[in-house]
Image 1 (tube, one colour):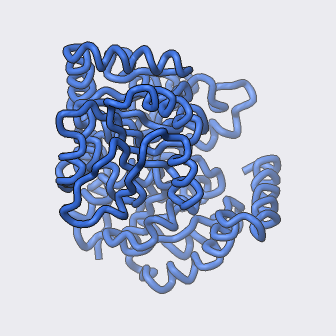
Image 2 (image 1 turned 45 degrees about the horizontal axis):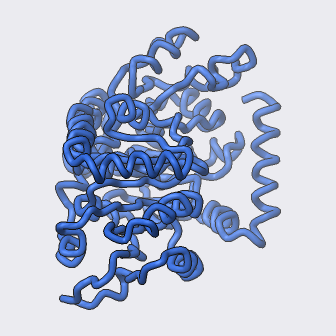
Length: 413
């Protein structure tokens, strides 16, 4: 890579190290990267040539998970190394039992890239959606290691398509094949001379159907929502809650399930303080106990995806911040989805809006308008939910298509 890129990476690394002493995520990243080579040495034989799969964070992992699990299901002896860049992925999935090792990916300097790839000695590398690390990609290319990116999606605003984007376009040339979600991405890549592109769709659709098949029953939550109009908030942030709670506080006949993105005592206390009704925390619910309130707070992990089925409408958080969270987890249950304006990076959000399976809101007034329509017009509520569910069903199969394209290159011991 060129001098500008490498200098930027080194400055980024320095900045993370400087803030690590007062930032828990940065501290975990630095400490975790120091353990990476030892993890590889302890868990990956130098002769096993594992498949190396890299996910930036937890969201990308969930996108790649269907492929990981299909590989292990069909080729149980195939070794897999899973790497993360963000603590939000590694700290949650460091004990993921399907793969043979999980580690942090060191910063993308030339020396780190060579050292990491030499230690792993992968038979192939798979990056998920948005991962473009120039030195790692260049090293993989130099070693003739098949390299893929899956569920990728491209927009004309990205650097690849700008006059100054030559450096980034060179990164794309390192991939053996780029598996994209849609025709628009393929057309954009073709326009800059990138022809090793195949439309495969988005593996996240396959993931949510896996979740649906493995979902758990929660009788207390089912009884809580039965015969009541119920809204569920998935991965909510404070700006989302400010909008939704104003409406809920004015509609005592509703029931609401709240699953905040961050779960800690301060966040839970802040949520309760904004509600004009008592709230029950799921963690405090005793076996066989009924939920005798209109507010349920999901204050634990691994529950939310199964809870969407008990709601009439889902509100997905993040749209007033860095971007919406997983809307497919809700839509798969054939319920309409609402979210804030920051969703432009997500094709499924745009698609669902176009068929009225999802709705963007920018204000309290817009949220009230769509909620009133759902509550007063059950036929419209049903139609919107059906559109959302059918959209998920029509977009299944990306995992199998990608698997069939790459499986001939697996090297098992």
